[in-house]
Each structure stands twice: as structure tokens, then as C-alpha cells.
Length: 192
Ligand SMILES: Cc1cc2nc3c(=O)[nH]c(=O)nc-3n(C[C@H](O)[C@H](O)[C@H](O)COP(=O)(O)O)c2cc1C
Image (cartoon, rainbow, N blue to C red):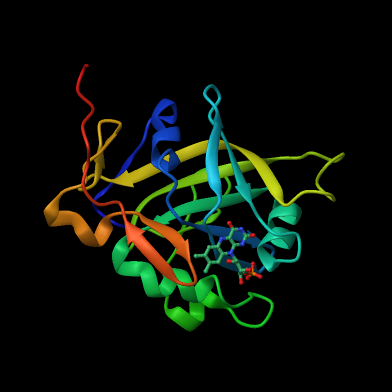
């Protein structure tokens, strides 16, 4: 348990991924657990908060998500860039990525989904919305956010706090080929 993590009101959950961070999709079914990187996720509905994330049908993650009906979206901070790339470059069918990389997870409050706090800025626990007519055709999965929490050093009172003193927790954004940018400087729009 990370002492800095605080619950995020569900009405603010969309702000956690509004800016397009690379996420770690966590999943478990029976005795199996897994984690993969995903650059493609976004909020899609306000109330209840719903998200979309692309989870390739060929992945181990997809298999566990379809079996369990739940998953986590954990937002790695910049300090986890190597880990993020590593878990996006190997399959849980071949290795237990938690054991291989020494990843510590806690059980999500609603479904017990493995959630990573150490080195992460936030997490969302999600219930898969089953789409029987399309799920064989598309990699996109829709889900309802049922719980969320964030490290108060970088997200508090429903807002991101990107500052010079929290670079290691700033979300990362994939440019392709293992190149990322972190969230960087905030530009505050002024009235014209
Ligand atoms: C930075 C990064 C971003 C990725 N984004 C996605 C994505 O949005 N959707 C997806 O299906 N796979 C994505 N991948 C690929 C999966 O993470 C990769 O196929 C992974 O090995 C699947 O693991 P699994 O079989 O254990 O589930 C990404 C990989 C990296 C490194």
C-alpha cells in the first residue's frame, strides 16, 4: 500500500486519462495475473464514467479480461519507463511479468484486480462492458470505472499537478519504438 494514494471521485476519473498517458493494463483470472502496456485508452462517457482501451485480441491480457470481466488501468510515472516498455514487449503466456520484474500489486477494492501503486501516478479499476456482437471483430474494449485513486503528490482535488519536483511520477506518452515523452510543462490557456 502506497501511503500517498488517495481515492479519486468517480466524477473526476476521466481526468486521469484525458491527456492520453500510456497505461499498464492489469488483469487476473483464477490463479493467473498479467500486465501489459497500452498507449491507446480514452474516456468515452461522463456518468457513469466509461473508458475505452485497445487490447489486442491476441494478447494474454485480452484472454484474462474476457474471462474475468474486469481490468485495471495503472498510470506509470516516468521512473517506470523501462518497466512499461518491458511489459509491452513480452507476453504473460511466456512469463509471469509481476515475478520477473518484482512488481508489487494490491487487490482492487471492487473486483480484486491487481493494481500497481509503486511508481505509478494513479489507477482505475474497471468493469468490462461486454459487447457480444463486436468483441470478436474489434480490439477496443469498453469498461465502466468502478474505483480510482491517485498519488496526491501529482493528482489532488480532481487536478493534475505537474511540477519540477515530481518528474518521476509524471505520466508518459508513447511516441513509438520505445520513445516516450513525459507530461512536461503545463500551458495555461488565457481568455482572448
Ligand atoms: C508503449 C507500448 C504501448 C502499447 N500499446 C498497446 C495498445 O494500446 N494496445 C495493445 O493491444 N497493445 C499495445 N502494446 C503491445 C502490448 O503491450 C503487447 O502486445 C504485450 O506484449 C501484450 O502482453 P500480454 O500478451 O501479456 O497481454 C503496446 C506496447 C508498448 C511497448
